Amino acid sequence: EIVMTQSPATLSVSPGERVTLSCRASQSISSNLAWYQQKPGQAPRLLIYGASTRSTGVPVRFSGSGSGTEFTLTVSSLQSEDFAVYYCQQYNNWPRGPTFGQGTKVEIK
Amino acid sequence: EVQLLESGGGLVQPGGSLRLSCRASGFIFSNYAMTWVRQAPGKGLEWVSGINDFGDTTYYADSVKGRFTISRDQSKNTLYLQMNSLRAEDTALYYCAVWYKWFDPWGQGTLVTVSS
View 1 (cartoon, rainbow over the protein chains, first blue to last red):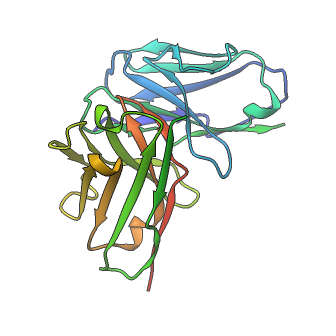
View 2: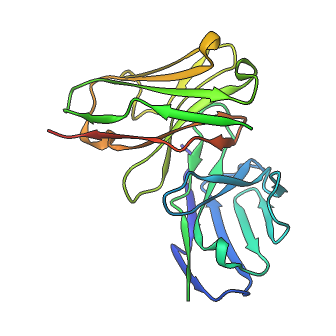
């Protein structure tokens, strides 16, 4: 099983700041990575797939990068509606064994 | 508008069974693979099971293999998850989602609680 590790577990930031979230895979997954945002009481929402392609309707302040084992989700200027938990997910062995990271909570500083 | 509406969750005793449903609308259901993902209270996301567009190929996480069965009824635009031999650790909010290689979109989930 491919293990996904996200860091940090929690990030305290102020609105307007630039935020960088990390996701590491236990083995190379090429660019087979997605990012999701989950707000309290809501289902996850797809932000990024293919490591760097924004999903329909996702604001341009969200960007993804990386390949192999190291990936990053960047929010260029954090808005109030962006405070949430973010998960990465690998699909390198699709359709078998997709796995998620444990999540990074972005909270208000 | 794409909509996924889960139902069938509830309280069940350990060892019991439950069948979840996910009614799809707003898209051609039979053209897409579908999946179940769960989230234990206060925890992260765990992929549970998936099924291809035709409904003839299924996939399971090791944690549920042999206990859960995924299926779909194309005529009813509905995805199912039959859960048997339920354990306390199966307690979670169960989401259905359209399964490309990523998951999009997701339903709002149905809560399964396994407790005596």
